[in-house]
Length: 164
Figure 1 (cartoon, rainbow, N blue to C red):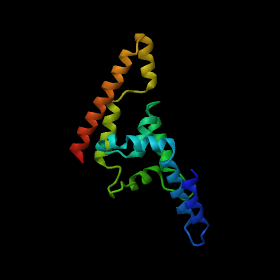
Figure 2 (figure 1 turned 90 degrees about the vertical axis):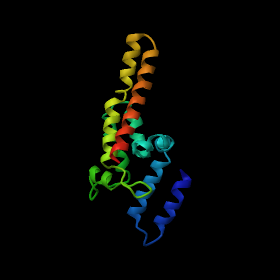
Figure 3 (figure 1 turned 120 degrees about the vertical axis):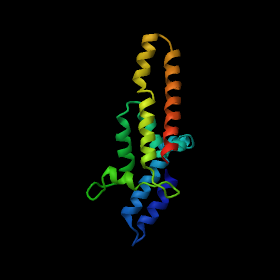
Figure 4 (figure 1 turned 180 degrees about the vertical axis):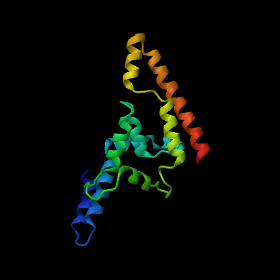
């Protein structure tokens, strides 16, 4: 973390530098190099065909605890470094988010793809635990997880390709 903070601390100490903007960039760099950020970056090549970026990947992983966690995760990711007073709403921040090539992260295709993913994907880990308890075997929870995730991925990909 020291290698991340040092350049920003130096830049903030220079007079005339936009310290608020630098703090936001620093918070974003810390997020990107956190364990969650590294995990999101790791799965990004697999989820890019669905129209998702690494930030959405983090939210997909955390939402396996419960689907409603997705919104909280996205709010946390897009609110990193903000002071609340003059900050934009989450909706506005997500609308302004762009990929490295300048295209918007959230558009009709990626939004529909995300909704379709959640229609078909495994509900949450508690569902797997209940199936394991009821069947007294790991066979069916594993089959469910693989089948439903694969189906969700395939259908999301189809929807993204149709609407992009």
